[in-house]
Amino acid sequence: MTRVLTAMFKHETNTFSPLPTDLTSYAARALIYGEDIPAYFRGTATEMGAFIQAAGHHDWELVHSVAADATPSGKVTQAAFDHIAGTIEKALRDDGPFDAVLLCLHGAMVAEHCDDGEGELLRRLRAIAGDDMPIGVTLDLHANVTDAMVQRASVMVSYRSYPHTDQFGTGQRCAELIARTLAGEIAPQCTVARGAMIDAVDHGRTTAPGPMLEMLARADALMAENAAWLDIGINAGFPWADMRDAGPSVVVVSDGKAPGTRDPDALAASLVQQIWQDRRRKTVQPLALDAGMAAIRAAAARAGDGVVVVADTADNPGGGGLEDSVALLEALLGAGIGRTAFGMVCDPETLHACIDAGPGATLAVQLGGKGSTQFHAPLALDVTVVSMQPGHFTFTGPMSRGIKLDIGPTVVLRCQGIDIVVAGSRHQVLDTGFFTHAALQPSDYAVVVVKSSQHFRAAFGTLAKEIIVIDSGDGLTSHDLKSFGHSRVRRPVYPLDEIPD
Ligand SMILES: [Zn+2]
Image (cartoon, helix red, strand yellow):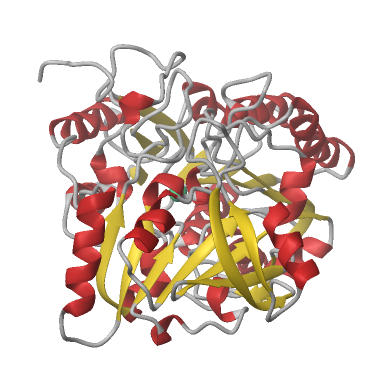
């Protein structure tokens, strides 16, 4: 029987975050071992869910080592890296023999001791597996793909949607290419090309016509034309990871057995050239706070069904934001915009004070602004505690559907017509469950604010009369990349440096 080792080790590292990513950070999202992994992921719309389904289809014996994912934050500690990588290494060494390995990675992990987390993980696994064992890797399209990564993976495929609603499909593509490799049909190899840019291809957005959809269509046409191209990955990269190779890339998986001549390096380079030429095209232009408030007021006043959905993009925990910026909340209060649900603010101190006070209590709080002195100070507010609840729910939206999440206790605070969900842990608000677990129905409000940049569109898009993206500048995922002070990325790079066309 074919035996396949699986593992998941994900992190999108915002190297500007003061929050180290340790095992506690992983435990807050997902840190699962052995046979608990299929119990958790079977039937979910995830890469691991797809690996489990593929194993059933191909009659593989899957051996599960560890599944680890943490909300984006600062560098992964060496201890956490060594523990998780070591668990996979130990399984590969001791629980074999194996015919193949399937890995769910992100691709933008920076560890304390190593800027290229995935490259280091693959180096360690190749040292045990040898050169010939097929290793299939899935990536987020915000991966910063390095030479070390592609050299050690047999198959490397990325999401093709942002919001990432094709996690399952990406897992399927990876598993099928590994199945064909095991059957001797193909001999895959990977190559990568990058350009002098850390931000382009519209950050990978696929919700409106634009450069990302055009690049994916071009990749599809190339694959349809030539069977040698097994997969062409368009990666937008993650510019808030300050490491040498950060930025957009194209990964070509080509078949060494296909007839005819081919040059995957030239193909990848030509696609990167297209990304370079289109680097300034964007489908979203975030508004500053003042313009944002005016836009919210105008949108709320317009006729039509649905709510005004506002994205607080500068403080997106899904990219490493501390989820405690109160700049946008202060602006809403100042503008007198009520009938608003605000999700969420991570503030354990305020959370516990409100739990102690209990539902119905009125108290003065210093909300948010505690994670870094670099950003907005805590906001002094008089609030009423509306409710408190254990924060667990199952994702019901198109992204990560079926995944069970326990975010710990939460409270809802009311202040001048704004209902604020306060939590003790950080999570991107990409599913309506972040409101409904607290008995808040987004459709009951005029305005819904989410700490998210783009993923929220999958679950909230159908509720929205209008979507407004605001960059307050107050957070670790502001689009103003020049304000961060990159020091490790290769230079010159767009948009940090002026580079002629
Ligand atoms: Zn992503």
